[in-house]
Each structure stands twice: as structure tokens, then as C-alpha cells.
Image (tube, rainbow, N blue to C red; front, side, top):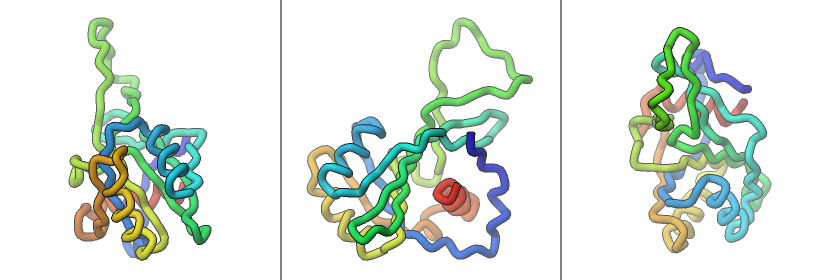
Length: 162
């Protein structure tokens, strides 16, 4: 499984992507279907989840890759974990059957999904279209470098490029 480990390795790297936050009650695969159907984004789920090690656990996030109408890359990431694995040193309880959740990007907990686009103009147009779609609660364009911490921005960049 792809693991994100060296989030500070990109310290001098320019993060060249536009970002949309999406809030929807749809499951990730349902959202990908609707985005593909209405906007022809060609989103396809990665065969392996993105593993992010945080606070002694490995958290799993589903990632979808696609293309916009000009063939430029897109990447949609769940902001809430789809699962987790505890490190071997931590004991599991037989009586605790809740699935723990962790936000990938705590600075923007209000978004269920983050969609990264290469083309800022396309991201603005998609934001307007998503706001009119009844399957989407809301969507908003935001600048990753102003809304997210440097570590979160690097994390998005690494997941996009795995």
C-alpha cells in the first residue's frame, strides 16, 4: 500500500494545484459516479488506499484519479478516513466495535472531500456547477496554501503524486 512518510521532504516545492472542498452525504464511489456522469471527470478509484501514519495509527483514505475536459489531472481524496490499523504495540478491545475516524486535513474538517485540479479556471467553473447539483450540499474553491497548514498542503501534494 502506498504510504505517505516524508511530508517535509517537499519544503521548497511549489504546490501547483487548485483545490475544491466538497460537502456531500454521498459515499465516495457515489460521488465519483455523479461527478463522472454530470461533468465527465473520469474519476477512478485507486486500487490501494493512501496510508497516512498519524498519532500511532495508520489511517486509510480513499483516493480517486481523473481528468478534466482538457485532459488535465484531477485527484479527489476523502477527508475522513475509511479505516485504520493500530500499530502492533496497541491492544485492541473485543468490545469496541466502532470504526475510528480521523480527518486527513484537520484545518478543514467541514469538507467531506477535497478535489485537486491542475487548472484553476476549471476549478472555479466546477465550483459553480457543483453548487447547483442537488447531490452536493456545498462546494467551495480555496487556496491550499492559505487554508491549510504547510504539512497538510504537502500531504495533499504527496497523495496526489503517489
